[in-house]
Length: 305
Image 1: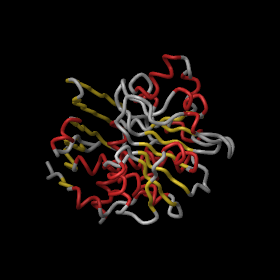
Image 2 (image 1 turned 45 degrees about the vertical axis):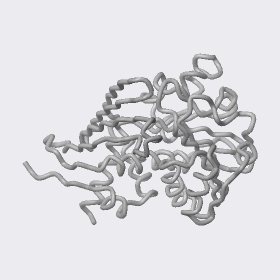
Image 3 (image 1 turned 90 degrees about the horizontal axis):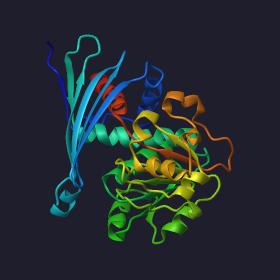
Image 4 (image 1 turned 90 degrees about the vertical axis):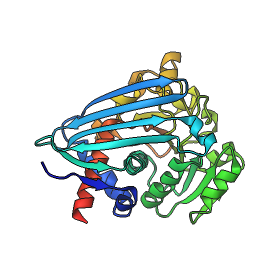
């Protein structure tokens, strides 16, 4: 039995590349489809999420996380967790990876790949809705994928948006969300809300909308009108349909049907816009398979460094 690698956040973060990760994610989706299993337990607003994935030719991953929203008011992190990566050939433990490292790169890299496939190539104005840690990661990822873009941040608490904006060049703060959406080419949203924060009537032709925040059946960031006006794409049908409110609510109301979901990454050739005026909407649902793909990329970069 070989000794597993231990990859900390700081050690891993400095050797990774956002565009390189999107290329690795795209390649991994050409391999045999992942076998995945999620277990969710709830206590009020608190969540325990355990995810497992196996991809033939890549390996096996187990990731567990607790999400305690009330920790924010206590000055503590809302999310804690662990990630273990096992060798595909013999099942040996290959690496322990920092949970925040895997989550950061998986989540923002997932959205960046969607935007690189679906947003107009000439997109230059990007709006980030939210100002937490995920918003920070999205600013990094989109800055790498769209290096000529300018960024605007909107958050219900403006002071938090101002703190985030000061950390990056070419980044300003918006006061009015509808006006900011109207001016954006790409809208990426990372808010943990149960009621829609983005209205479909605010969208304009040609935009790309990227939704990250909702991860529970009772959560959604956009209303039915937005889902109806847009061509809808997801990272994985298996981990979004029937699992996340972003899709559960409009499917239950009849605003859309499952046939309105155009494609996921396992049919990535169909992840494209049909015209410059089309509104594309991408739901980032995550999933253990994406954690596995990201962890394998991190380990490969680590061993090559």
